[in-house]
Length: 122
Image 1 (spheres, rainbow, N blue to C red):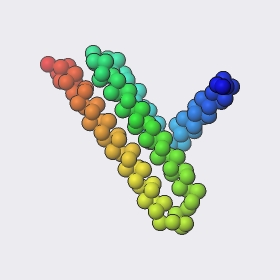
Image 2 (cartoon, helix red, strand yellow):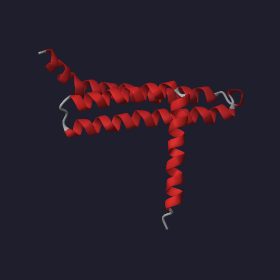
Image 3 (cartoon, rainbow, N blue to C red):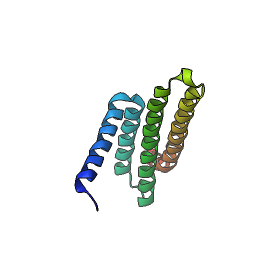
Image 4 (cartoon, one colour):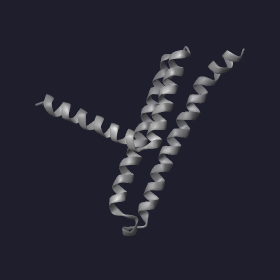
């Protein structure tokens, strides 16, 4: 049976996690700011529905990757690098995953927005 009270508690926990990450992680704040900027551009320019959907998915993907990176960093910090030399490697690999997802999102963003910026110059 679905428990409305447990569902509300789950949402509160998720929002607490977002707030925690936003307060403590500079990269997450930067990515949220970029997401707000991209949203403003999507509102300003006459984008097709599929372009807006792609942008929303990409923003969600990058923010999710940053949340996972933060969680992995916190978890590996519990292990301490002296326990295993892979701890530093795990952190670097997760940071690389965030970087690749961000670069991919930025590339797709340029592909979507470049024609609109070029039209402004005409």
